[in-house]
Length: 278
View (cartoon, rainbow, N blue to C red):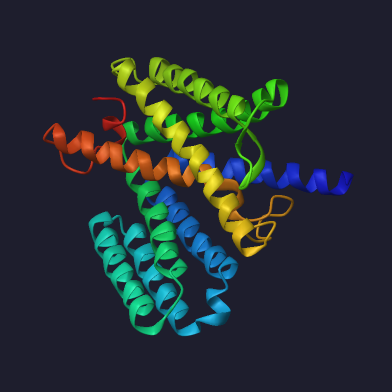
């Protein structure tokens, strides 16, 4: 038990250093991290859903698509990556409709591919992207930590007892409130010109989506009878186990930032600044 805890702490520290360093430098470093996360998520998804064993041809097509998306992310061509994701999704739907492949295949294609794209696009290469990622991390981490402690301290009705018996409604509310506070503090100290109401509203939405992502992964693992998504991270399980909430929060941030950017007449480039209502 002591050895397991030690391994968990060491691997956690190493992971935190890698992620924060890549976030700080941005550019190719974060694009590489985003592409790698997308590929690892697809590996875990295809393993959990047994796609790699039961549908090897479809899985090979999925890997080819994810590889192409990862390459586009590395090149910084997010427009190509989105186009490739759409193409791979259509192919996956074709496999499902014409060859009876599981519906988890096209779902996994989108889940993995969009994760890498959303992460890399939000971070971008500018300071606004750095602030946006720190905002996103603060919201998700505050949600996870305070939801756990508030839920343990207050208890009460369960949030989704059939999916994740340990989560409570009080914990969900505590996590959302703490996320709003954390997001508002990031906006106040790092982006003084930000629209605080927009930042607070975005933090709340991302917190809700983060908790939904946590529940979604719990549902997937319960559905297929697995405890961890993989054993890729010593002491922590798999990548999906560590970024389940972040994935859904990224999806929401990507969608919100794109909508804000387009309604203000901008392009898809300054997504980070759009999250703060700029």
